[in-house]
Image 1 (tube, rainbow, N blue to C red):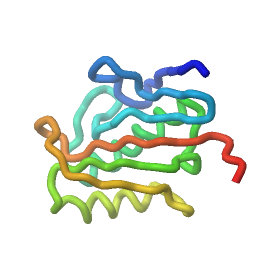
Image 2: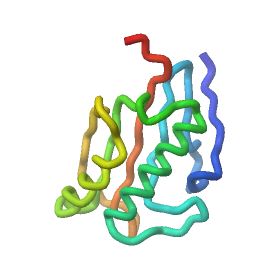
Image 3: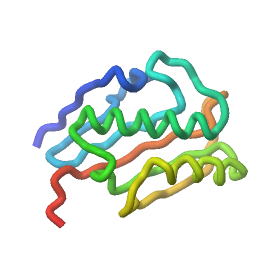
Length: 127
């Protein structure tokens, strides 16, 4: 099956040589998103960045034909373990039951970025 991509102006343009999302068949992968508004403005603080990052993830998945309930896996990258509770408080307001699987890791991100999130969705699950 061929890979397809598209873009949305509801999320920031890619900052490098990658697509906002890629789709093969019923699988849609959202590239890592950060706390930027679609115009490129970076929000401050892990809470605001998490909310915007998740908005961006949902927007790029929607461009690929996927919705929140199609998400099966989310990866969260944080710069500091002390940010977990604030990120988690925002995260739990976005996803509905049944919740997707999630991994959270602590990494070094570019200056000013507190969080990056990517996701994998499957459209048309027969389960």
